[in-house]
Amino acid sequence: MDDLKPETIKIVTPHANFRYSYFVTPDEYKGVKKYKGEVLIKTDTKMEIKNDDGTTSTVDAVPFIVSQLEGLLDRWKKALKERYPQRSFTLTKNKNGEPSFPWSFEEDNLVIKVSKKAGGIKQNGDTWSNPPVTFFANEDPVRLMTDEERKEYVKISPETVGQISMKCSGYDAGANGVGIRCQPMSICIRKFVPWTGGGADDFQVETTTSNFEEQTATSAADF
Image (cartoon, rainbow, N blue to C red; front, top):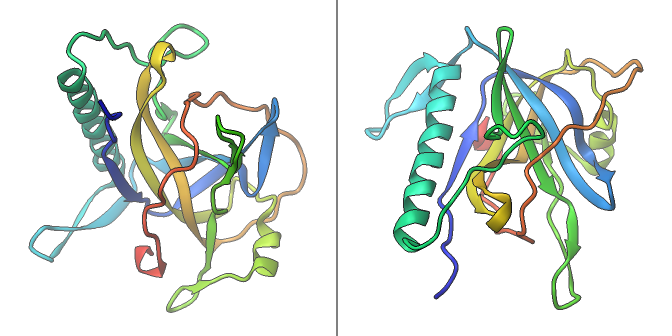
């Protein structure tokens, strides 16, 4: 029986801040390189969404995005149980033994952890790689940045404002649990604030057994 392919959705955030950002040069931790960061969205933020009939609506961003992520997780758990009825599933746990999700709440922010591996080695010894995060400039219309322009954003202040397009999908890590993850695809920088120093501890991201994954289409139209 083939492995169950998880559902994938794309979420484009409204204006947000970025923390612990490694979107240009991947961070290396215990030999694994990842593009990663945290996306902070204020709880009173509004965003426009496209309706099925082609019209648009203005919604509260945080409850809308959380409902998208919770719905994705619920459908993934249901699909796994239907495909493998004899298996018992548990959610991935954090270091405190509690269920771990890529989103959480901190003061007046929704915090979404995004992460994707930059590359690795398959079981047969072949190497694989993921494309880097795409950057768009805040112009009208938005413009794809050059590789040279992207270098300016190797280190950014948490006060930097932008939008990020994320690919969200389920994963099954066997004994390590199941859950969903959010992978950074592209970013449009709306207000750039340079990083001025300091440091940040690494944060835990769910471990999965996947290698290269097909990318969800992303373009300037996302922003």
